[in-house]
Length: 374
Image (cartoon, one colour):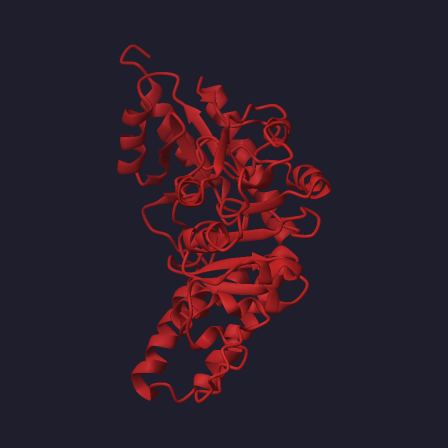
């Protein structure tokens, strides 16, 4: 058992939904609560140092140029909305997204298309060359392509480098929902030519719900019209008497009000663990777990729905016998945390799991697949 994850009675294969907290994150939250209890806001300056330290961690996580490029928002949907309703759209413009995206990356573009009279093009993603399918849907009137880095249901991972380079060459903005990528794989915002990146913290980042990372390419930051306002988004938030309404030049312009200090303390601890472990090491271990689960599931006759060539941490499969729903219920009852997604069952193992835990999950799956005559 990993010392940071002393889980009891569960095998956590559901990091693509809501991940557990590491021990240090739970301790950071408890310490922050205790500090508030006994001394109130006396140490607020130290809280601000934690906030800045967390921006540095977020910068390292995606490869941004400076910590000031990183904003903390409530969730992925809020960040997507800032993009969709902040850009100035021209008549005849179209937006391209994959079909069957998670609702947060569909609803916002549906609503923007309705409000601004845009054409929304939803593209089915084939298992082979999905990037080409998206690019073929783009034309001279395409202003933006928005996509998840990894599809939530099938686990299909896009080649962000080739897709981003092609979009950059054509002058099309690239908006990346990285919630199923960050924490599972290394990310390079410049290598991917991403103009906008957002991700909630509660999945592979192993932190709470209610806080997310948001990046906007610095040279286009002021192209987003602000629709949320407050003291914290001003250039000098400490000047409480100001009547100069100048938004911050940094990404803090997307943070209108008081920061989520509790969430920031928790995120700080979780990112500390991920960066301390090493993003490449994490990716390698997740890949090893994926291969082990895939081989084990195939050995008992399950059908693998996730692309073997283009996967990240998600593995979606169908059982050899019976329904996905029945197997899902059994797995949940036995403490194997997973999800029903994409027409099958979705496993999503993180780096800290031990092989024995995966073997136990496979044994439970295999036992459910036996017929009475076996």
